[in-house]
Length: 224
Image (cartoon, rainbow, N blue to C red; front, side, top):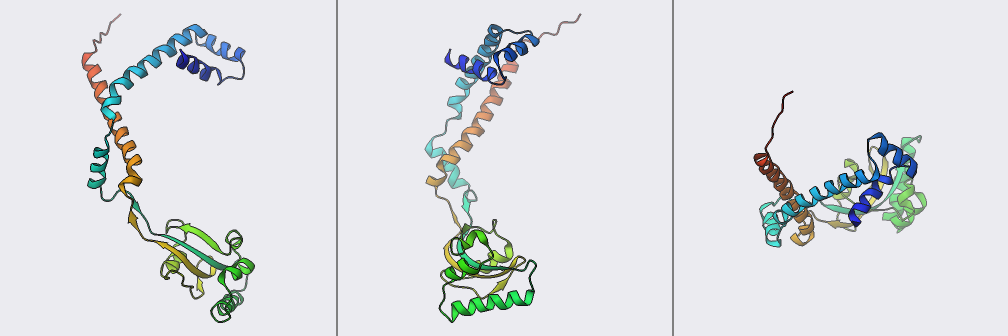
């Protein structure tokens, strides 16, 4: 009864008020009692199907682990980098003066002892990262322009780059962390694998159930 009441309530909630709900039912040749009867039938059908596929679609841990071991290409986590940078844009600026400025910043860091963090905070044109000392957070090659990612990926952890130019402008970057490409462990993937196998088995079970019901059905076509 609670499920039926909730189903009726969901139907009612689609309309602005009870009068509109009633008018819509009447337009379809229904009243609330007939609607409840129809919904009760639909819920019963859904439960009948669920009872027959639930057991067939369950997945044990050893089955999920076997799938993991037989699928070596699944769960590959790409290389992840973390870096900070000082960025000078070329938009509406003289290219030579921008290059000269980025080289002055690099000299101040490499020779003068200034930190890239402080320089990025004060001078970087990347407003989002400059608030965090130029920190870009964690990123993969899929999230960054290729020319920038390749330059940063070539650095050793803790190394600061020479000034380099991308399509966006000039950068000085420091690689602060690298997480090597790896495969996720079974424990990390177990929930996802189990859901995948359960969904596949549910689909197969429902298809099989439909085929069985079609064989059992007694269909008669009556001609006028």
